[in-house]
Length: 81
Image (tube, rainbow, N blue to C red; front, side):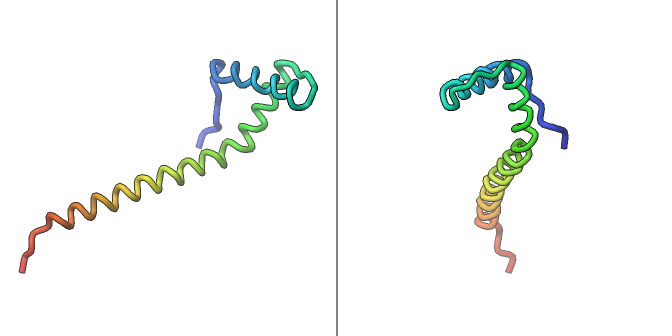
């Protein structure tokens, strides 16, 4: 699996939110570099866990759909006795 990468368009609003969070919640200011560094750290640490959790959710959806399809196929099977 490739590392999780964010585009510049994704970084910009996140950087602004991190900077605002520090001001609002921690009464402290950080710069663009520090905010981006924090985002990179959290993406590296949390990204794979969140990704795997999303895959489990997707697998559950697919499994339930496959079960419905299997039931539908069973309903139209012909009796061969």
